[in-house]
Image (tube, rainbow, N blue to C red; front, side, top):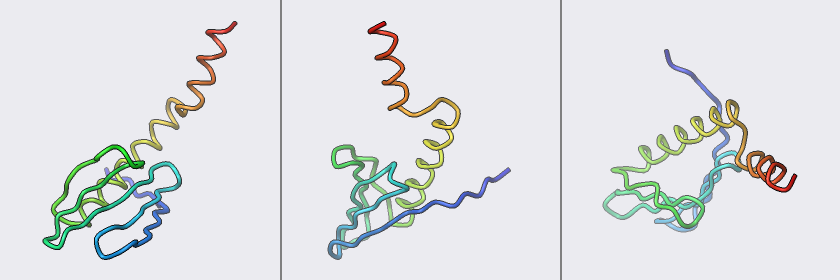
Length: 92
């Protein structure tokens, strides 16, 4: 069974090779596309998500990751909530 979701993905072109992306403010980074069409995605400025054969494959992977992150946060809470709870248990 397929699930269909609506995601707000903002793409901001910097030049012909670089595009900034913001996926619902939870995943941000840069998409670098070479003249031969290969595409690299860098998350939050320091993590290489991967290299893809085309920009469309990169966008598909970004949206899939966002959906998985959103589902995990619904089930388990956010990392910020986890840190807040851990600080409360350590210092009490």
